[in-house]
Image (tube, rainbow, N blue to C red; front, side, top):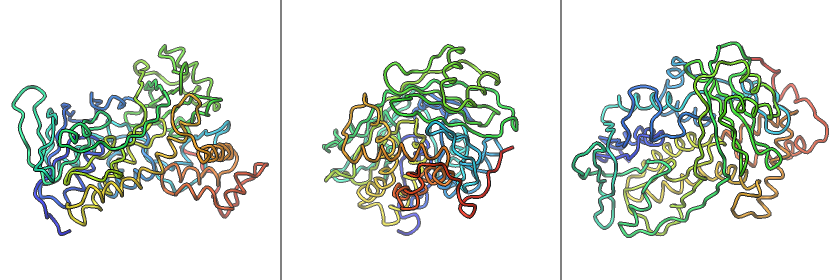
Length: 454
């Protein structure tokens, strides 16, 4: 596809998915207009359309790499605003089983940043691109259609005004979990996609604390829930504003963390590693604990539809929304946007089928990891196969091995950060390390010595 073969693309939603999509669309379109129903803040601030924004977010190594590719220099810009670049194994306390993983140099580059600051940086970058217009306070109400392809969208000002049609040579639905894309397509006579739903009943309670840079020798702590035997976990991430964003989580009935400040701190004492509890005892709280119960994970299988309208695609949470406990959503969204740009190299005709096939490959691995992890809890409804049981059993052994074997920990982090395929955990050398009875140190040639932060 040659440069600027099409005139105008419309993006519904100024989410992370929508903003990164706007960036890649400029490689093929003269103009891009982004609509969002919220009044978008001028700087870092939480907003109604992102109810999870006040809770800790994860940007995986793959997400950082894709953002830097699409927006060169953005990591340095975010670091100048207080975000914390890090080595994902060396600078983070990871607890997958009962013991923390060895902290060594891994080469996995991550970034601790609040959702509000990341979105503000992306809005600023995208709005500065020639040809891009971001219009807030405008809600999409439907699509326009000529019988074969979507030709635009109908939008209306939220504060009151006349609904009007906006022509688009391509329309992107990036309106998030609560999107109406399926309803819009039904109005045009298209069948809905299959939907897969997994709801672990996870509840998040978050609170910010003041962070003194350099006081701790880690940039984040992640105590993963330990399955039915330990259906709770906790996260602390050092972010912009010299804050610790702390999220405690419980999985299933009766496991929700408390919102009373004293009980909240006491809840953290149950975690297998004491550092998060100690942090809450020593750090100054900023505000009160905030509770959030998000809907379950939903995957919409557009790639399986035999009939799709041309010139319309859904991406981000509108295509697949994840249990946020796994920290995959932002990374998968930006990876989908990159695949949208690659699919557009072959033109806009036939784009939905090409894009959904590419997006499915991006989603498959994180979906299998999060859905499989949730299905380890007996109360979670969903299909369980012998394969699921075998994989969950092996993953439990991998997680236990991360507590004493740095090589296993690094490989597991490479997989969970979407930098290697899951099959790399099952090579003969890795199988031997995972199934070995006694803890052994990693060979010096395989891993450098431990490096402390700060």
